[in-house]
Each structure stands twice: as structure tokens, then as C-alpha cells.
Length: 565
Image 1 (cartoon, one colour):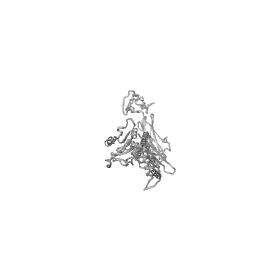
Image 2 (cartoon, rainbow, N blue to C red):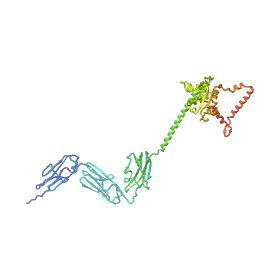
Image 3 (tube, helix red, strand yellow):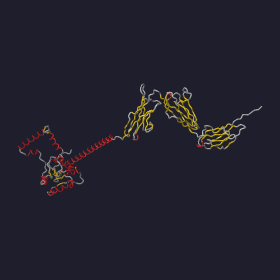
Image 4 (tube, one colour):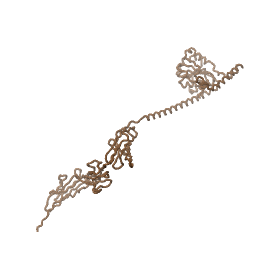
């Protein structure tokens, strides 16, 4: 009996590394390959990487091995173990990395129509080669679900790379939405979203329009841009957003606030009002802003122009003017009150100084006190002092005779009340001097209190008018040095005045005692007439459009000016 033995072909197998083994950078990798041989077959094993031969460190008729002590990026590739007769095995060696995935063929979103057969494709790469699965509404999609309307085709295009195609048969409106492909391997996962829009035959199209085409606002303020959209529903298939210079604007920035207000009422058109508020405007915010609505069918947009202008300073200017005016007014009021207070206080001091002499009999140590402005001293020295000195008139001038250490008011009161006469040298300089006015009021007060006709005014400046002279002196008879008529007489008139007696003017009672009885009767009648006149002056009698009472009161006012208070 003849028995024949079957020939067994050799079988090559790579023992290490295994497929999808996790290998890290600089990790040691041991490569080992074995072959199963029959009794009558002989041959050798050989290692190759990407077609290039590698020399094993150890080998025999049944196995061959080598080791890479620190695997580098350039040592990745397809390693093959080949027997002499061509039998082989291979393994992919790569450094481990997480998957990366993204859509392919079409850019999301994808639009399709009812009953069409859209295909969504996703690509992923990684080491080990990732697997791809699909999800919609957080539920995994399988080729057997939903009436077998889905089909999934996964392919490894090359080691480490995988594609997955999801095909939908006879797509319907409820198929619209976000589809997520997830790529996974031992190191982690990555996902990518593809949005599918399904266009129906009678679906209205969404529109959006700016409420105003242009807005103008001041720098540093805020402004709200508004767009209104119609046929816009608040669902997962619709999004509304703003963009500026190619960048989508959101509430994540402190400079922008985005608010969307959807309106959906039964029987009415669904609408949205989207508002973009810009805070603390800068000039760089000027430009074109785009409001957009994206639904399952298309993208609609409209432009809004924003112009940032300089701040209107009119209100600020007016505010500054009003505040400045109020401050100036308050300051002026304060100064006025201070001046009035100083003047009142000065008059009180003058009245107190004069009060020491009001009750004295009038003992005089000097003939005359000359009240003049220091700016007129040259005139006094050249024209007035020589005739007084020549006639041995004992006079007082402040520049020579005021006692050092005394206050000005005390020196002034002593000079006015210790002199039989007072001469005021009237000029523009005199009227401009506060000290001269004090001397004038002191002299008029003395004359009014004592009724002694002790005051005379000498005008040396023809530039001053009657209206410029104080009211208490306005109705007096002056000695006018500037008058051509008095050139030859003014000096003697002053001397006669200084030499004249200054006793008090007799009162009406003393006059009555010194006259005869007939004269006394005539004086009594005169006094009665005067009394009747005083009664009548309280009546208002029209006289050429004026009032007699007003005129008389004016005369009384002139007399009142003689007082300090």
C-alpha cells in the first residue's frame, strides 16, 4: 500500500509588535517573526521597512528578530517579515497619537431637498487607526435603524487613516439637524459636526433687515444697532448673529452685548429682533456691521453703518460757563459784602473818633486843615502854602503834621476837629482817593453837627463835572481856581475864609430874644408860614409831570448824606 504525504506550505507570523500596539516616543520596540515549515521545505526569513531590507540581529531557519531601542518619528512605517518563497506578514509601527477628524467632500452646513439621498462624509487619522461612529440628537446611528434608511461605509484608505460615509435614503424634514462623527482610539477621541438642512417645497424663506441703515454716536458713549428678521424660528436649525470685519461678535467680549428676541404667535409670522449694543465707543468702532440669519435653506444678511463722531462739547461748554458765572457771581457777592462790611466798620470807627469831639465847645489849636490828595501836593506846595505862610496862617497838612504811630482815623479826627476851618482841594485825584473821601465825610459831619460853616471846597481840576462831585458837596459854592473869573481873587477869598469867625450860627430862639416886639411878631408869622410849608410838602402836587414832594425829599436826602451810617 502506497501512502503519499501532503506538502504543507510555510506560514509566516509576526509575533511582536502586534497590530495597534501603543508605542511612545523613545520607547524600545522588539521585532520577532516566526515561520512554520514542513520537513522537506527549507528557506530563510527577512525583515523589511517600507520595502527596504533590515538586518536582523538574531535569526535561524524558523525565526528572525531585532530591536529598536528608542523609536523616533522617522522610524515609523510598515514593517514586513518575508520568507524565501514570498510568504509574508506585516505590522504598522507608529508613535501613539489621539485621533483627528473633520468633514470631507462638502463644507458644513449641507443643504438638500426632500427625498434626495445626501451623503455625509468624515475623515479621521491617528495611531492606532481610529474607529468612526455617527450620532444625531445624542443617539448613535446604525445602518439597521430607522427603516434601514441609513447606510454607513467605513474604509481605511491607508494605515492610520479612516473615512466614514453616512448615506441617508429619501431624506425627510425630520432628518435635518446636526450629525456628529466621532473618531476614537485607545488614546482618546475627536469629533466633527456636519449640519444638514432639508428644503421643503412650501417652506417660506427667512429674511433680515436693519431697522436703520446708519447710526451716528459720540465717542465714549454707547449705541444699540437693531435688525429685524421675519420667518425666523428659534430652533436648532436657525442661528442669528452679528459680525464686524469678518469676526463674529458675541457676549464674551466686554465691549459687545448681543440680545435676540424671538416672537412666535399662532397665526402670525415668526420674527426675531436682534440687538447689538456697543459700550464705550471708540473711533475704531466705526464701520459696517452685518446682521445675519442662517436657517436650513440659506444665509440672509443686511448691513448697518456705524459712524463714531467727536463728543458734542456744547453742553459741557455751557455747563462750564454756568458754573464759572455762578462762581464769579458768588465771588463778586462775597467781595461786595466784604467791601460793605469794611466800609461800615470804617464809618463806625470814624463816628467813634468824631464822637470824642461832638460834645466839646470847640477849642482850636490850628487855623485850617488842608485835605488834599498826595498826587496834588505839588499844587498845594506851590500855590496854597506860600500865601498861608506869608500871612502867618497856622495850617495842618497830613504829609507833615500827622503824628506817627496814631491811626489814620485818629490823625484825621484830630486835624478836622482841632482846626477852625477845613479846606478840601477838589480834583480827580481827590475823588479817587479813599482816604480823601474819609476826610471829606469827617469834615462834613463836623460841620453838620456844629453848624459852624467850617468847610470850603477849592476846585483845582476843571476835568471834574458837577455830577462827579459827591452829593453832600454838590450844592455848595466852590472857590474855582480853574475859572478865568477867579484867577485874581481866589487867593484872597481863601485868606478871608480862613480868617473869618467860626462861631455857631445863632438859632431862631436867640434871634427872637434880640429883636423888637414888632420884629418878633414878624418872625413869628414867618415861622408859621414855614410850618405850613412843611405840612404841604407831604402832599403830592403835580408840577409839569413831576412831584413837589419828590423834589423836597431829594433835598432832605442831601442832608442825610452828612451822617456816617
